[in-house]
Each structure stands twice: as structure tokens, then as C-alpha cells.
Amino acid sequence: MTEIKLGDVTVTRVEEMHGPIMPTDAFFPSMPGEAWRRHEADLAPDHLGAGMVHVAIQTWVLRSEGRTILIDTGVGNDKARPAADAWDHLGLDYLGNLARAGVRPQDVDLVVNTHLHVDHVGWNTRLVDGDWVPTFPNATYLMPRADFLFWDPANNAHLGGGVNENVFEDSIAPVHAAGQVLLWEDSHTIDANLRLEAAPGHTPGSSVLKLRSGGDLALFAGDLIHTPLQVMEAGHNSCFCEDPAAAVATRRRLLGWAADRNALVLPAHLSGHGALEVEHHGEGFAITQWAPFTRL
Image 1 (tube, helix red, strand yellow):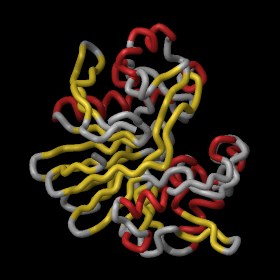
Image 2: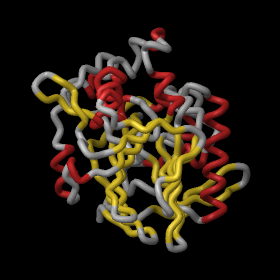
Image 3: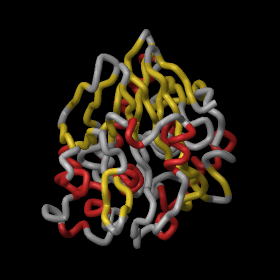
């Protein structure tokens, strides 16, 4: 199963890729090795194997009030990624996967980039005759203003050379130049079912999308967590969090929101069943059940 219904909204999971990405101690420098061992039964094999964190790069496709909405667009093809060899000049069938989910590029009405990291904006554009052009020609791209300003080399030239090298130039600026970007801050209402909210910490403009429809609640959580272990050990961040203290505070706040309301949590990068429900457990949280998506 790649599709579920939440109230009046259909949610479809579309994969770009999945598998091992980084060693546990490199990806989560503050996470004790003992925590990985203690929760290994909950993590292996979908999220952990041979000391490596396993993740998925995927898009959540929402159909709401007659519109087709993409949440995050993965890494993309043909892009120079000198800081991430595994993502350099890819040639993946992501658009084919979208087509098999019933989505053609011209059908997309909105693209939501929860934040502007390399693995969330890649398919914003594609290479055509040597130029980067918007992949979704009829879409409005919703981008957090704080991240747009932060990653713009004109404002932060010192950020060059990191994991986001070339990303603004090939995946963000061309869409902005085409007049298809809407920059938002604090919050943004998409429709009666969907609302974007700022969730800073991982990046300055990181955001989540909350769904409320027909009695169902969901939290499309972006990079609030990268592994289920961050549910049980919510005080630990990935190495890519720009403001560690804010990232922890945001994670605790939003997992608490989901636990209090029995909301489904759909992060950007969980492989396996991809989405989960959580509850309060002592000073932290526990996983109560997984969504019925087929395992990646």
C-alpha cells in the first residue's frame, strides 16, 4: 500500500531512493551508542544495519480540495553534489514513480519545500538543453522565507562548500526566476485541511505541515526526526541541525502535539512503513503503531 486517506485528503508515498546513508555516530554525534543497541529491535532492519542509519528520500503527495500537492522533492537528477558522492549526478526514475502514482509534472498545483536542504528541493528543477527549468511548470512553490534568505549565497557566502553546495543555484534560484515561488513566514494556510507552520532549529526556516480533516490529524514533519530513535531519544539531533537547542525544543513540542492528539507523524526520511503514531513515555515519547504503508 502506497496510499491512505486522512479525512478528505488522499496521501500517497512516492519514493526516490532508500538505504544506508551514514554511520550512526557520524549522523548523530551526541547519541550514545548504548541507545542504538537498546532499541535495535525497534530499528533493524528498516532504519539501522551494520552500524549505518537507513533512510528514505521520498515525497508525500497530497490531493486536497481538488489540488495536487507535493511535500519535498528529493535530491534530483544530473546535479553536481561534491559534498555528497552518493547524490552526485544521479539518474533515477523519480518522475516515473510519480507517474505510476498518477501524477504528471503538469498536474502539480503546489510544491511544499519544508526546508531548503539538498535532499528536499532536488526535483524542483530538471536539466533541459543545459538549463535548469522548473520540473512542475504549473505549480506554485512554497518556500520558507528564512531558509531562502539563509541559503542565498548573496547573503551567506561562507556557507559555500557544505552539503548544500550548488543547491541554491540549480534548485531554488531558477524557480524563483520563473516567478513560481511564494515565500512565507510564521504560518501559511493552504486550504481548509492544510496549514504550514514554522518549526525552526534544523534550519532557520524549517517547517511542518499540519493536516486536520474529517476528524483525522497528521503532522508532515520534514526533518523533525531522521530516525525513529529520535522519538525515544528526543534530545539528540542530526549533525545537520543548524541550531541544536532550537531543534530539540521544536522536536519535543511537535511530538508532544502529535501525542496529545493521536496525530499521524509523517517525517521526510523514514523508510520501513514511513509514518507512525507516538505517545508520551516518561519524559520522552514512544511509538504506538506504524502506518499501513508497504515497507520500503
